[in-house]
Length: 98
View: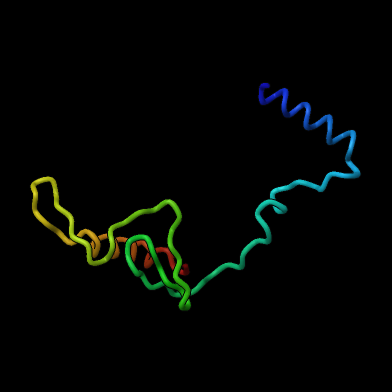
């Protein structure tokens, strides 16, 4: 069955039985809108901040841990975790308030 056929079948069923089907919308699927968290952010590492004691990890971002070291293209070790945290801190400083 194609997607279009399945959608047509679902629409037809919904029109015939509108009294028994719950309303479907995005708000019903994701729940209530969360309250915003604002304030001064402390950088934990390159993908995590803390605001008012609440840790917030960025979805879809993976950065080195703050104490982690990496090797560059020439094989030299450097503090990639610290640099990642510093880059996030610089970004947040230019984006206040968070």
